[in-house]
Length: 337
Image (cartoon, rainbow, N blue to C red; front, side):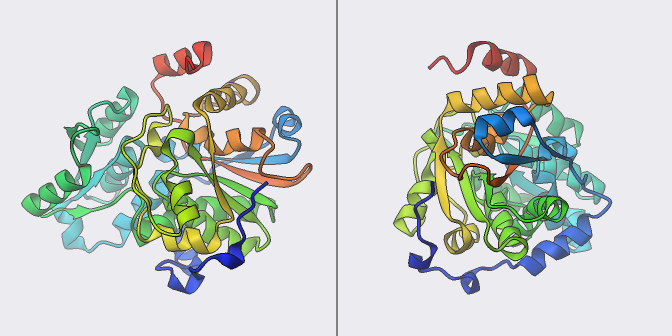
């Protein structure tokens, strides 16, 4: 069970740059554009978790991940001139696809800075959505510096993957839909990379289900968020290695952290093998493809460590973009650990 006492935290909701009203505004703007993704249940998953689980399937969102919500919302707030000049983003894949697709829908050409080792399926989809890709080495180069230089050179507007008020508001619409669909929850488990989804989800949960305990879930090897949460300030870590490629950030965003400190109950971690076990459950019992990062919340739920028996637990499945050969390899052999 989570042990962090929210009353001990120094940050207050008033410190935050985004509010639930922003999430509601984003939801209105995304109506009829973003998919209203289904909420799935599974008796097998419930039995393994000893809880009632509600899975919000953002793996079935446009672009294959929740990232479309934030990218579209952010681009929608730009001026006509900014959209004419184009946008730029940096991403390991899901935000890349989201910005390319959202930009195409709104008449903004998109340039994407992606790591050379990004999954091939994510690279291919980004190109198919019309994105121009600039590759970099995630272990020796700074994607932020490359992106900033290109933005200055070409006059582009940067759409960050998580540290942006309109991105946070857009991401929060997934949790808003979940709660308005199934009612109040005892716990909400959310994948955590840079913090956009977690921050937006916390805003929605605290407005619509005030007693809900919102918990962020990271890979064990990429626990910068957990360290920051415990320390009370943002901590940066070296580039981590995990099969959860969408959560390999090295620090939380400045807009996200105050929201997380104020509204999130705890941040926990799961192992890569736990992610594979959750992937297998989704494939075998629920017949859906979920990428490792998308399994973070489910892996935490199946561990039975963060909720009480019988509680109502929401799980945000953040994405389903994975190379099929890699997907088969992980389901067959696990992580090799």
